[in-house]
View 1: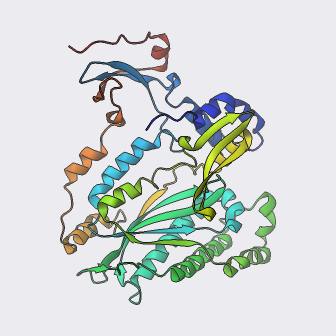
View 2 (view 1 turned 120 degrees about the horizontal axis):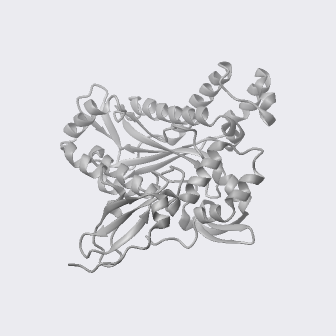
View 3 (view 1 turned 180 degrees about the vertical axis):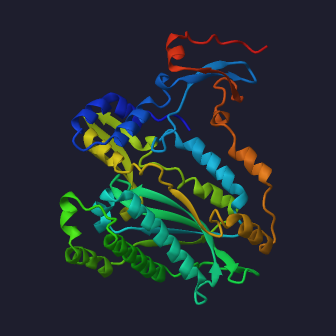
Amino acid sequence: MSRPPLEVGDLIRAAGEAFIERSRQWMRWKHVKVLRAIARCRTAALGGHLDECTRCGHRAISFNSCRDRHCPKCQIAARERWIAARQRELLPTRYAHVVFTLPRRLAPLVLQNKKLLYDLLFHSSAETLLEVARNPLRLGAEIGFFSVLHTWSQKLSLHPHVHCVVPAGGLSLDHTHWVHSRKNYFLPKEVLREVFRGKFVDALEQAFRDGRLNLQGDLALLAQPKIFAAWLRPLFRQDWVVYLKRPFGGPQYVLQYLGRYTHRVAISNHRLVSFADGQVTFRWRDSAHNNEQRLMALSLDKFLRRFLLHILPQGFVRIRNFGFLANRRRATLLPLCFQLLGSEQQPQAEQNVSSTKDSSDLWHCPKCAGPMKVIERLTAAEIQLRSPPVVTAAA
């Protein structure tokens, strides 16, 4: 993919320090750290390495990445490694895609309690899927899946939701056979919606009783039990959004499908259109009008504030496994799933080779498209002092 004409890093390098100074009243060090990491990503400030083509001998200096998980440029290689590692876990069956979304009413509470409410979102949605699937009146099986947290809408506003990718079936409750879902039906959306709403609100009320909610500023009045209960009550009067796609293709299609949802950040560089007169213009998809592409212009300050809304708490895991794919159960139950489906799991060695490939393997020679190999590591000071490498002809 070609380099886009405008990147988030360009915006930060152009006006990021002035934005930081204007935002000192509310900005924390974690925000500054992310902005400065993105600004330095793949520049001489982070050092680099001298690469040589193994085919024609062409040499070029490549700058190092910041590897911040919020950086739009650093997620492609991480995504490819993660998908390669998942290849041996994909079962020879159809898959379903389920999305659980928190109501907009909860957004102010989420901003003050990101870690807690994102955890509740993960666990409530996972428990909903596991419980409904185990019901003999529904699927009557033990399922396994992974969930990915996204916190943004197309307009960069706060919109927490989890994408769950689930095999369309599961282990029988006695682990003796594989239970297939119906061809065009996985689980009832209405039931998932009601169970998810009940589980999340119950968990939220328990967190309030335990004193784990941070309620400050405009939310300070909610610290009173009666006011908090009245504030929660409207949540039961609305239908929560649960998107359920009919079971689709098998494992090879799923690999392509995964790339759309894993290791995403709030906005990709390719959605940026222009930066002029202090306004950032970007594309967004209008789902209310057949996903029509539209343009939105925001001031730089507003754009960066929205971007920073989606910084995750330190150490927060945004891709999680549940059911028979949970870390403590995968080694035992996943081979059983393959056996009951009449297939064999890929050897571990193949996963190791795929998942340990260095991101530099993705870099190809601009002259002959041959693989480039790192021959020398360079510090930031060495890059500043070093003259451009001499291009050598092939032997």
